[in-house]
Amino acid sequence: MGRIGIVVSDLVLSFMWTWAGVLVNILVHGVLGFSRKDTTGEIVRYLFSVISMFVFAFLQKLSKGGLYNPLTALAAGVTGGFSNFIFTVLVRIPVEVIGSILGVKHIIHVFPEIGKGPKLNVAIHHGALTEGILTFFIVMLSLGLARKIPGSFFMKTWIGSIAKLTLHVLGADLTGGCMNPAAVMGWAYARGEHITQEHLLVYWLGPIKATLLAVWFFNVVFKPLTKEEEKPKAKTD
Image 1 (tube, rainbow, N blue to C red):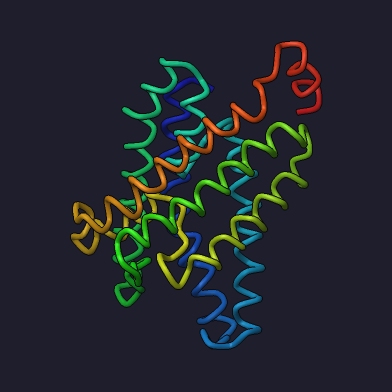
Image 2 (image 1 turned 90 degrees about the vertical axis):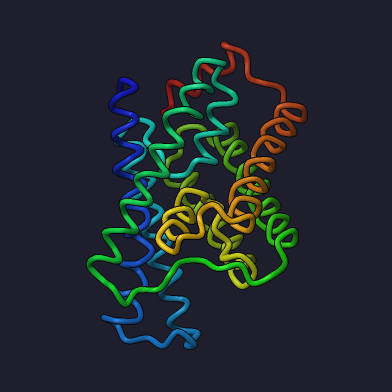
């Protein structure tokens, strides 16, 4: 798929991702009637969240590289050469942000009573550290899965989904456990808080620094694959 196709995929997936979380909440708490304080309801919500992540993993595979998270795009851009890095920073990430903003605007138009997205419940630097640590581990895991389990779509998606869900739960009461600046940007833009120090430090600067650190650390610990080592992976995909 050419770069135009990738950009369109990023826009659509980012739009859909903001809707996915809202629809899961509506299904669990509205349609099925589970209380937000009910443990069973939380388990059911987590189950649907994992299913949602499988759906998006399939859509990413179907679109041959479409993304909805700037951190994932950044990690790929850093390792893909200078041209790819510039394209990621100047085009893909802004498009993913636009897709998220459009998604939130549409959500608010359809469901005016809907929530206002993640909120920071701790000090700014504590929040930035929390989002940074969560991001570091999920980026490290993603890079590791790409290296260690080639060709196994189900297994990679299952491990990645459970890991993301676990990290989200750990950070939910502090920052929302987002690990996705674009999605947070959509809600912050709707509240008029997208240029605040809180938003920029916690949901952008912290995760971006953690992503770059994770990519650097992974490449130091695990040497890049040679062309001969990459060939078996290409056959199994």
